[in-house]
Length: 378
Image (tube, rainbow, N blue to C red; front, side, top):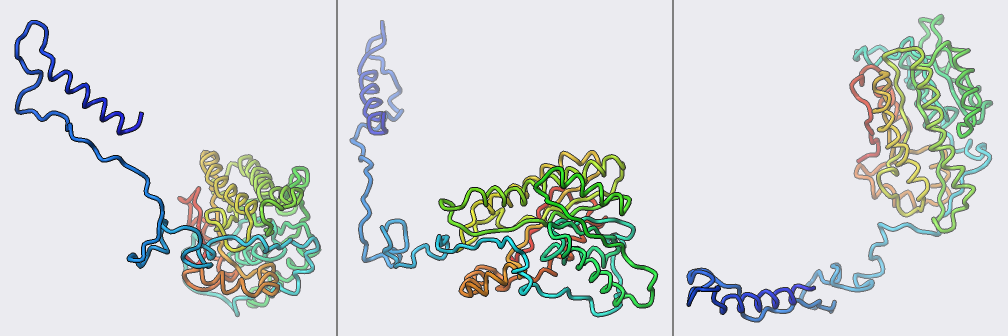
């Protein structure tokens, strides 16, 4: 029953009750004369007004009263994905080598005052996807903060190369104490394979004796319109980004629980894409994968709080990694589009994540767990 029919029924019933005397009582009104009866005047019918042009309203074309693309062909275009943008992650990562900037040191001996709780002295950290890109730069930050490092990557040869470079860089920047050298090792692992993960963790423990911290940086992105995304590639993306994060986190958590320590901490590398929709490139599976990682961190933080294991997430924005540089070389127009959507107007450098990862792994954040730290320029 609609509103108009309900009002008619109430008016009709009210009129009949008011006119009919109660049983055994003469001329006794049903209601006091001072009371106001329901309105008996005809109500105005509510009708749907069709959309029509209104020349007197200067904002008509940009409101929902207008139809089609009356505001112009640009209508909504800045906030939509472009299905013609297709970027397939290279099977041979050597294609990215030309776009990979060299590691940047601190420029010499570093002695400045800072909170001692930021130190990772005596700790062993594991970084998956640590042979290049964000993982490599974050691994460098952990070494600079005092940690020993296990680089985990599908490309062990590249990991070994970068391990040697990190040691040499440390020696150059700390010439006064040549005996103090971090232990940095490289390990092969397919993070999407449970057996490979178990073997890798065992190998790290054999070489380092323990694991205190984990950064899950292994992952990749691709761009396909959802309706044409190759299913096998989507499964691979999900396997590396989500399954890999889960498998390595649970494996390291079991080790931390066995040791019964109180300083274990894990950082997942998510993405702003886990909370927003990037434009114009279509990447629905990647966005969903990073959203899963973000909530996985929150869930495991609650689940493992009893074991003193903190789990947090870092969600970077657009970072100038080797892959990003390659994409911009191929599609330079995206540079202007992306930076126009960032409040600070710039893309980040991988080094911008160094402070965040040291903070979340160290005791400086000992009361922080289940958090998602956005490093995205606003």
